Length: 183
Image (tube, rainbow, N blue to C red):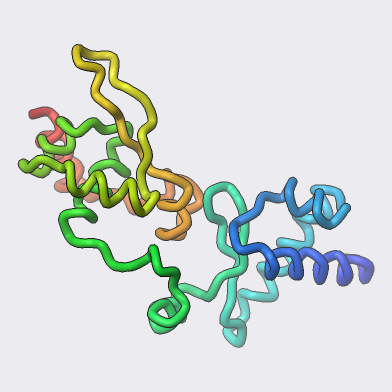
């Protein structure tokens, strides 16, 4: 790496520090006036720097962008003080509803009810209010029910780059998920 990359890396780091949301390489490139290739090199360099045990931060890929965040092992002890107000705990029922939507999106109320056995109206309202889910369309069946999917806020709160980064379900959970979903 060239010595000139030190200033570019510092500039990229400063941009990430100032941004409150994840930002993609193209956005960093525009802000810094650097080529996308230089931004990628600077991000690689920052990732290497933050990988050391004496660093409390890391680069997190969230929703297609990158941001500086506390390392996961430190976040648990910090989130009560520094977590956002809308990251408050949600009930087990809301978490179950959110998991159903995340793993089977797009999902309708009837499909969610099929999994949980209860009407999900209150949970859907809560999750919509917290911007963890959104309406993504209408299913092409009689009555045209609304379909729900997860949001970028969901990805951010669960520190996922894409929905594909969700933990994989065990075979038994996958079988249960498919069987209950077919009801």
